[in-house]
Length: 357
Image 1 (cartoon, rainbow, N blue to C red):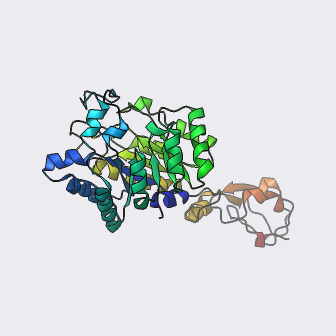
Image 2 (image 1 turned 30 degrees about the horizontal axis):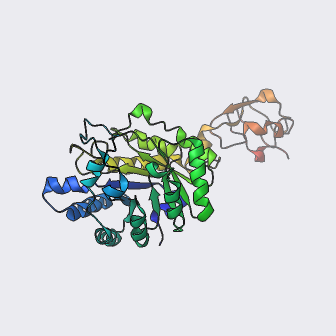
Image 3 (image 1 turned 180 degrees about the horizontal axis):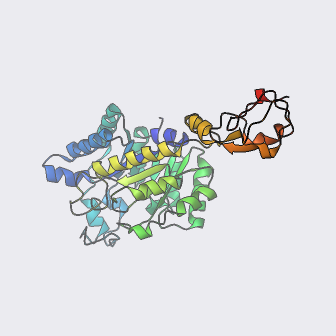
């Protein structure tokens, strides 16, 4: 199964992944519709604004967190202080629901994926995804990393809250069993991430340290007015961007308060399109669009005085003026010392036909 995420990134193209996660539960409650209807609505909205892939989260609270696991998010935004209690609210979907979402995404032409948080989820998501996503929280869960690597699919690996040795060890485990592309996603495991903590220069470090993998960014900052966080990440080398997605940023709890909505996504996509339009080519050469300006703004050798026919030309007889339609000043040595074949009037642009060879 091919992954649009990987194909675009390998081709050097920007990828935006809408991390729907489990936000559809709250959207369903707000709109008084079913979670499946809400999930499909979010997929449809994401596709409409040009997002390339949607990602969900697949888990069961019982296999993910002990009942006394403390919170690690902003409890002023999400007041639940137990991970288990929070996850329990959002774990009703199983294979049948994700298969329905996969089919819906396929019909719309947007890539489906979901982060698996247990072995059972990995197994039943295998046929629904072209790429596996491993959360930062499981980066050091090496047996689980190995299990997913053995499935033989490309892997998106978030590296939030990780040191260099941990990242290197995890990549080594993946590479022991899997030679498919890896996307390393810079990430800060802080919900939300203050702008001053985004630490985007780490993208450059990852790019330099791991030249044979794709670099991306999993963003937890609140959307800024001009999408500068994402545009900066992209300009530093992050091709794959993952950001939480909602239809209502004002909803309390979970991942709405630092998520992008459709307007934010449009700003990101339009901003990246504009960035690409101004990047242009890596070649150092005169552009076709510069030719007229080059010809008229550059200078030519011009007669500083009347130069009679048969006179040997010296540098005192010459000056440099626009336009550049004659002999370039760079070629003055091809003129000085030559004999004029005709009378050259003052202020005339000198051409090679006017002088002896």
